[in-house]
Image (cartoon, rainbow, N blue to C red; front, side, top):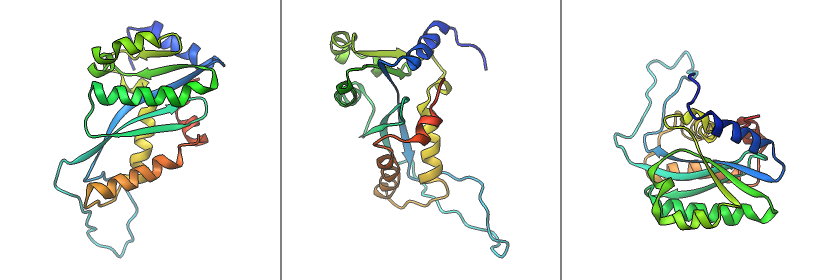
Length: 194
């Protein structure tokens, strides 16, 4: 893997992760498509030519998600579309959820254009002393720990499943999300960066 050009920002994230007075959150967006995903699986030898059903459509459901790296606490919002307005709602909810412990909040996020939108620029400036946003280098999603969470959710909730409606996939995905709401050792270990 090539070393990112912005090494100072990555080094800063490692320092934040070690700090006792900072809650480090990784945030990102994801779509779960109606047709699910297929992976290798065991099939009994007596079953010849197994059939895997999938929906011939591109319909999907989107989510904003955040995982606190200290304890694996997970937060999510369903989003019909990802833009500055929906991201701003998510940021405000995340801030109200996470600023009660007296710790500063630091976010790890990518460089999507709506993460820098003018709509919430004043709010970001006003809260920057307690709510820091750390942007990853461009084209480096593998550096965001929450990408591992999306992979795990797909494996648990959508792999080798047939969903006939968006409501079914929503239920499957959100059942997984709800289990992680209070903090979770699995997510803490999965997203560990130090």
